[in-house]
Amino acid sequence: MKEIPAADKTLATIGAVLWSIQVIPQIVKSYRTKSTEGLSPALMFIWACATIFQGSYLVSMRSSIPLQIQPQAFGGLGVVSWGQCLYYGKKYTLRRTLACVGTFYAVFVGFEVGSVYALWAGERRGITWPMQMYGWITSALLVLGLLPQYWEIWRHREVLGISIAFMLVDIGGGVFSGVSLFFRAHFDSTAFVQYFLVVVLDGVVVLLACVLNPLAKRRRAREAALADAENSAGVEDSGSPEVESMARALDRSDSYPRTVTLTAQPHDGKSDDESLLEREERVEYGGNGGRGDRAVSATDT
Image (cartoon, rainbow, N blue to C red):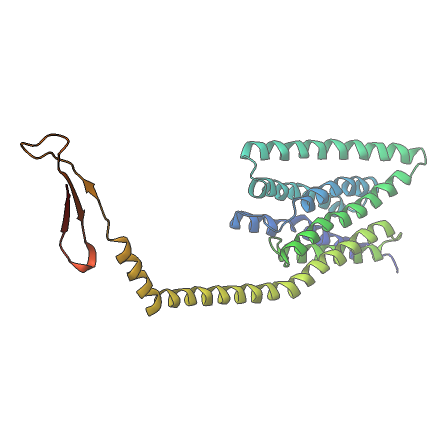
């Protein structure tokens, strides 16, 4: 295709803007729900790591300014989303979360700056394979990053926690950035593979959401209806005449305590050997019968 710098710059700029803000919907979703359940922390961490290599590659290749800025913005926001996974999901304290995020930012900046100057130094000596290696590392990390997210989808049987808007914006960024490559004098096959993988892998997530989420919604509705039916059946059984009659019988049987008292007193004028043993049994009847007390005594000589 003929080189058209204006088309290349326009499409690349649109793609870079979309990729720069793509994580914002995910950050907003996690903040509003105060939960990252279903969102894999490994996804955001690995993708943030991928942007270190991607940023080093694009800067060393002297790509358009929008494309050079995009990995920095995406990586920075990706680390924020990863921090939310630590805070909401892993229950890290705020101080520990900020320490993890700050450490990642320090490594991010130091590694990328050092890599760019190292790649340029190799280029001046005619060594260009490290640049290509950085590009392929980026592609590999983009693929590996989504594997933990696929596991979360399989575990929950639905796309839970991850923002679909995040995925759609990411797909849009990949489409515009990939198309822009066709309007350059030299087609960058490594970058095209990266963009193509993003579109395909994110598209799988969106497709799974369209298929699995309605099924999960109907499954939860059936489970709720079954639970309501079981609860209703339990209430009806507890109010049946047979159950109430048995409960009353148990109450009556438990409401008749019995106490037995034995007392021995000697008669006046008799010796202890000829003492009279008096046994008195007192049975107390209470409860629903309304009967009084009955005393029974027996005398043995």
